[in-house]
Amino acid sequence: MLGRSKHRALSLRRQRLTVIAFAILASIAIIVVCHQHDRGFIQSYIGSRQHPMALLSRLSVSRELSASRGRKRNSDVIRVPPRPPSCSARPITRHEKSKGEALSISYLQSVPSASSVAPDFTVSPYAPDVVVESDFIEVAGGGKMFYTKIGSGPPIIVAHGGPGLDHRYLASELSAFAKNHTVIFYDQRGSGRSHNARKDDEHITIETFVDDLEGLRRCLGYKKFTLMGHSWGGLLSMYYACAHPDRISSLILINSAPADQRGQNAFDEELGWRMRHASGKEAARIDSLSSNEKFHSLNATDIGAAYRALFGLYVSNRHSAGKLNLEFDTVAARSGFAISQKMEWSVPRIDLLTELTVTLKGRVPTLILHGFEDVVPSWTSEEISWAIADSKLVLLENCGHFPFVEAPGEFTAQVNDFLDQHRV
Image (tube, rainbow, N blue to C red; front, side):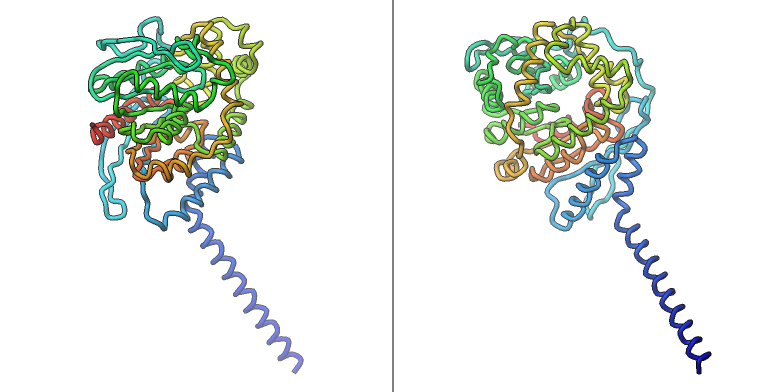
């Protein structure tokens, strides 16, 4: 009896161990299946050497987006596969079926890149063979705001980044759209050739910048226009769209600043991590942008070199920063630097996502472009695309903050297709 009981006990123990083993294997299988999408993010971050906190925030949003995909999607997402980082690109188009519908996906074929030597910026920043008309408008509080207008056709007003930069870093590439449109660049209050506009604390607010943009529209006599904003200019464009939705025929956001505080915090964290891992020479140049005293010791050439070092952290391939037009007038650059510091404290806690959903309600056709390697996490543009009904989101892999110089062929093709579809 004792031997038989011992044998039965051993048999039961084996059965329990077998059940436990199967349970463990089943759990591993479930985890693998449920995290296939997240693993792709992990692999992409390991490949680009992103830091762990950025990975965790990206995975968190990935899970939120995955959980929300059970409801009807109100925006189109195009994910552009990677290209070698030392190559420029030209688009090749094919169609894939997604959820029973044709989804146009642009793939990139690598071609030899141009020289990585910084170009000569002593020439005009605008595309060749365009007629340039420049003037100033009066703005609230006194002073004038500079704008320049090129081309003919439906109007596009371009809001530059910063705050505190001017329009020149965008002019060469974006003036190509003047072939079929009137493209209006302007220097925001206190920046570039608008540095004489009043810029005390009372007037350096997001509301004043929105009013300045509306004043430009009224001065030019446009009932409606396409608004195109890059980086900080994207955030400004969203504020304007919420305040004046009936004035916008379409909205184009290029690597926009985040629309909520969580995204802003993630951007700050990512930039801080990249700065801590910058080389000694780059770090020294970037440090000269850390205070008024240091900045005012720089001449025009040093200012350009400092911003180029900083923007080297924003791009997929650091040679791309050398393609940006970063010529500065010392007086204007110092004014712009002061604007950036004042605006940092004047902008309240940002929470635009709900307002975008409630105010726009599918009224404004929207194109959102964002590079995966940007210092601004790409999931912040995914959030914006969910907030704006019927928006189109284009995610560019191996591309950072400046797609018009990092992936010019695909960028131009996507924007032209969008403008053709929503031509007024």
